[in-house]
Image (cartoon, rainbow, N blue to C red; front, side, top):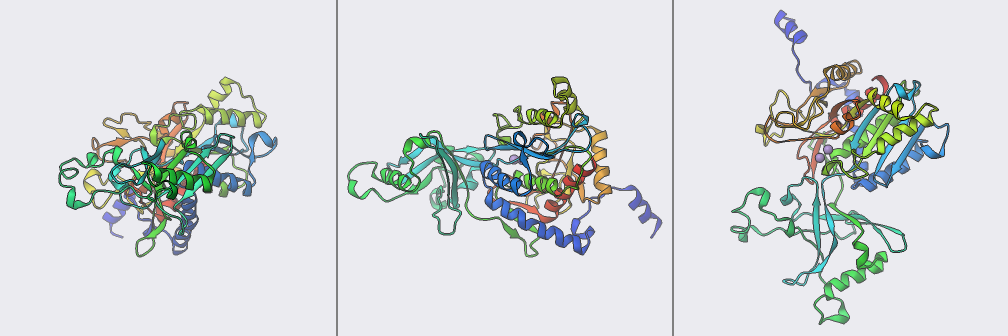
Length: 471
Ligand code: MN
Ligand code: MN
């Protein structure tokens, strides 16, 4: 090797393409790892479905509800069917600090309004009114097949779960966009963010009137209610309290001729939920420190609400872990436990989009296929609203990844002043823990079809496992 090459290799940082670095065997493992992930994405299109998935999975893996198993080392708690804490008790006292990975299982979507069903005057079609959830580009949701996933709580307290539009034999739904021929004034004169008004995001629900009632003005709506009542035993009032989410219909797919990528809905942030839970399940026996996977809800609307990361849930769970482990669990011990703890805020980052490279700064942005991103800070403007991880902790994480042969890269969200965004990191940091953002890059984030690299999915899993085992 020439001296200059030697010096370059010794002194410079350059991110590494996983597919160049990994052995043939590891590449195969990475490609196969995504099969289970795609199944997970198909089964879990809402936060409730993600929790249902883990209730089953945790039973299979031998985890016990914390209240119900006094001596168990693998325990969990589900809260309000929407968030969860899953833990393996380590050898060291919990009060010396836990290693926690937090991700979120809600995703941007469109909800039904509480009183959604109406019959449109201009067409007589049965329609559902909607209210979007999280940061979506509204135009992306028009004229694309959609499915309904949700939960009704009937008057007698019975829960009715529905999924319509995922089975090949199911009907799907659509919010019809305007044809280009007539869009000149109504849409083309507007800014892209204003071209679709939220009030125009109505879902076509049905079109046949109730046969015996041809004359009344709501006979199509009535027919919809009759069909819903026959199939699910619900009445219109049951919608008022229900949570019905509209998501893209269909399954996650391999993408690219080499099948190196995954295209699917809700990868922000179920990619980190899945990989962190797999990392916990696969972690070596007898971890030094207690390891926790925290699956949070409500991140996409600011982590508020009693199932969001700002709620007391995770702190209460850690307090109960102290108690469960026979340790003091008074307020002071709990505070110290949190301060001694280390957290990975496992959320996706924006990969450089080849169609829009100008919003990224390539030295500091996430490159798809170059491994999991270690992100020191998020936020917007002058790092506003950012956790900004400490150099000591940042360096510790990088050191672990290097030793454990994890393909990782540094990655910031976008150019300074280009926009911005935040994660759960700052809410976890409020309690004094060391926190850093760490997750894979995504193209088309918050769109109906997010694109990720199988190299990065696998590298995230490897990074999270290395964290639990070594941090
Ligand atoms: Mn996210
Ligand atoms: Mn998001």
